[in-house]
Length: 253
Figure (cartoon, rainbow, N blue to C red):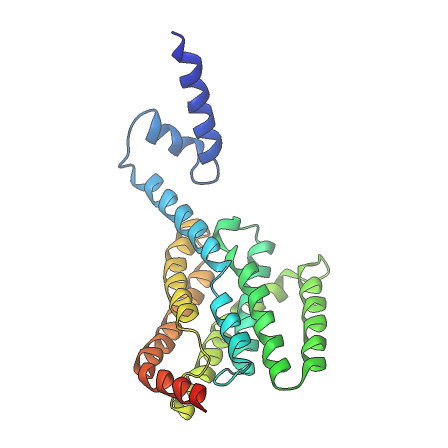
């Protein structure tokens, strides 16, 4: 009998940790009270939530390898500013559209952290091209535009149009990077860790978008993003030896 209050306390603590972060009250009861661990709809929700939180956690550092690689080399060779801008447009569209539609944070949260890292990369590109002032001006203008998009002043139709523009923006941004890699014959300072994490994350987001938002536009955006990220990942593997040998020669010189 002495253990009953402790058991009750443990059960309430578990419920507090899991609901609503990873599952609904109904799913919690199905799993832990009725022991129905094969309840398919609840399993889908749970897997989607875990994937979403994992993607957000990964996004905290997904572009840090790219940033550190730029700082270490003090070079932005192989990186396209146009590609970064188009990628930033896509990230901004996803973030503002999700906030406007009140989608759960687990379905879009990585966009916030990817945005912060992407604008850092954009600034570094300008800085190492001896255009630091232009890079600073870009940051100010972008943050002002983002504030405007998130404000009630911006009509929902504009936010939806921005999200709809994501697919062509993603395609063009990746194609610009693909063309740059092909033209250079190597991938330069492009980080393999960043590219493969983005590829894996966009694949997982297809499932979480369908499960958590039911929004076709969001899901299609991630399908397109996965395909484009996959092409760049293949280029990294194809040019791997070329990029490595080029880096060694640069060190020797």
